[in-house]
Length: 146
Image (cartoon, rainbow, N blue to C red; front, side):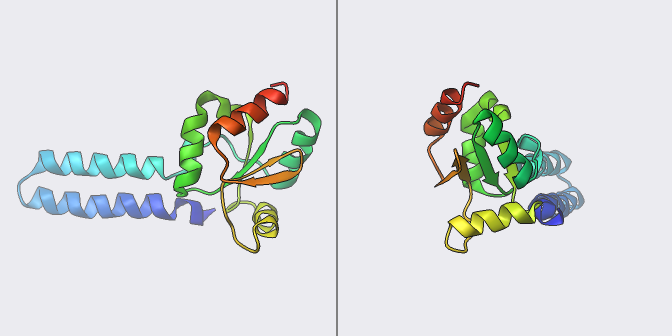
């Protein structure tokens, strides 16, 4: 769990240090802008922008029932963020598994990616697809009847 928050926490801490230095130099406006920028950057790199994660086994069980894709991701991954942002509101209809929070999910991703934790890995009908295009993922969602 802590691994998912390491980058956002480090960004806020670094921004705070720089903002403090700017305040002591007499630039409170610049310090505020700088800190706000780092806080926004931390928010984008946090798990907060993703739909609620569930366990890999539960996601696979639900996917078997309704046919929705399962996306394995981790925070700080720019490809995961890009997929999430491009899916927009449709992202809430998918099953998301954070591999840093779910050891079974991480093991499954390593199994299908030659031992690497390559994400996003999207499972559709039990078949893995590594870093697929967002339009393809949307098509899979609409073909599942959702």
